[in-house]
Figure 1 (tube, helix red, strand yellow):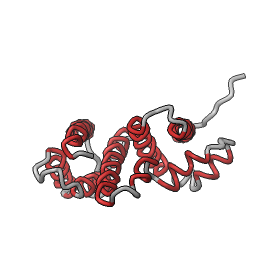
Figure 2 (tube, one colour):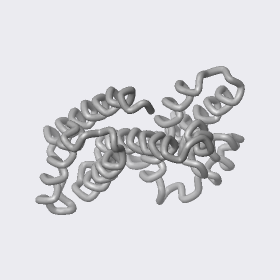
Figure 3 (cartoon, one colour):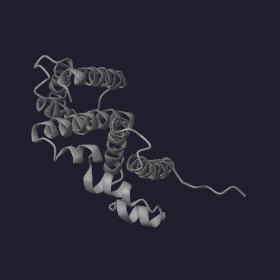
Figure 4 (cartoon, helix red, strand yellow):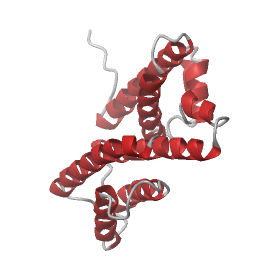
Length: 209
C-alpha cells in the first residue's frame, strides 16, 4: 500500500521546505565544526557560511507562520545542532566577521557590510526562485541590497549594481503592491541581480576587504 506524504501541492511544498531547512541546519553544523577544527580556511568558511545564513533567512521568512520557533523545529527532529542554531538564529553572521570586531572598527564595519550585501543579494535571488514576485515582496529585498551597497565607500555612485537596482525600484514604485512581475520581468531581474552580484564580488579585492 502506497502511503501519501502530502494531500495537495501546498502541503508538498511545505514538507519540501522542511527538508531544505533541515539540510541547511545540518550543513551549517558541519561547517562550524570544520572551521573550529581548522579543516577549512577562514575564507572558505566565511563564503559558505554567508550562503547558508542567506538561504536560511529566506526559508525561515517563508515558513514563519508554520515554524515560529527554529529551536523547537530542531528539537522536534532531534537535530542536536547547537552551533548551527547559534550561527543561524542568534548571531546571523559568520564567526570570522564576529572575530574581526575586536581588530579594527572600520575594517569590521566594512567586513560586516560586505557580508550583509552578499546575504541581501542571495536573499533577493532566492525570493525570485521561490516565485515571490509581487511588488510588496520584491521591493523590500531590492531596497535592502541598495541600502547595504550605499554603506560601502569603495563603490562609486555609478556602480552597475546601484544603477540597475535604482531602475528596478523605479519600475516597482509605479506598480500596485499586489501587482506581480511577468515571467519575462522576473527572469530579467534575476539576470540583473546575478550580474550585479558578480560585479560586486569582483570589486572587493580593490577595496582591500
